[in-house]
Image 1 (cartoon, rainbow, N blue to C red):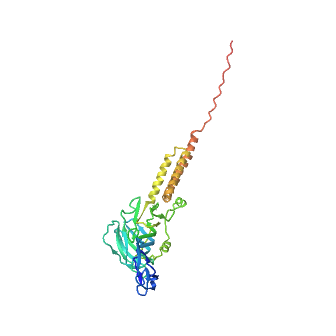
Image 2 (cartoon, rainbow, N blue to C red):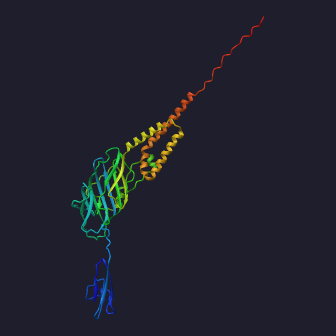
Image 3 (spheres, rainbow, N blue to C red):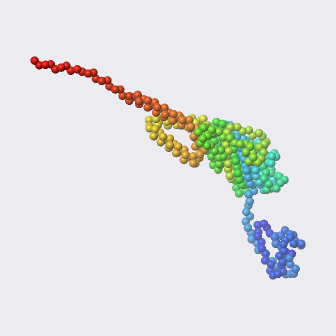
Length: 373
């Protein structure tokens, strides 16, 4: 008997010389191991076999696939943000899984399939933004079965958030399996950010899609508050919301969706009262400046502003609608100013141009001419 064994990176073929060798199924071997790729049997000698082999490059497959990830962040006016991160994933790693957290994070606990595990900090790396940790993912099931990972930690945001009237809020997101590359794939990622009531997150961050859409009707009515359905989030991620510590939320909640994963989320914020004061005062000044002009000129300015807002809304409708909500009282004040000025101006013109009929001249009587004598 003859058997041909090969490496998994090779493709082999054999050509038997003459009719001495008979090709058989490797499972029919009785004298040799049955784990070969090719098998032959012969009954007489000499017997020869010409084997050809071709080598192929091995294509690496993704080691870790994060099917769903939910990152919830509570940001207050202090410098520490509270994180709860839940992931549903598959990985070929049988012992340890690498997880990168923002540098300076204070870990509160890690759960793997709702079982508490202790993370192990990796050696000092070259990444100045993240710290690497290894988490035990040893499990009895198959490697292709999905499991859950829950992280809770505190992270100091620098610069301090909401220190002023407006600015940008940047929150870093954890990385599962290390840096994003060929060995890690993130399919769906949702991020929910809680901020104090007196602030609003406006616009849409890069690489994300805003899930709550502000409508024109709500903007005109000033209804810009944002909330999320916590039960819907728990049902979507498919893991328990119970963690190693209580996750308290407060304020307004904004949710964003991403395909492919992201390392950070950056969005613009402003103080609601400050935006309203600036917009109202600006429109009041514009109204005063346009008082000496005609109504045709005033309405022309209004239509130009509407056109600019519509064009800007094609790029970022959320920011424009938040601007409409902030400026709604300014628009009312500006038109009220014009209407009042028009009414009083018309009254003054009426009084100033009143025509008084002249009094008739007194009649004069001419004396009769004197008669000449």
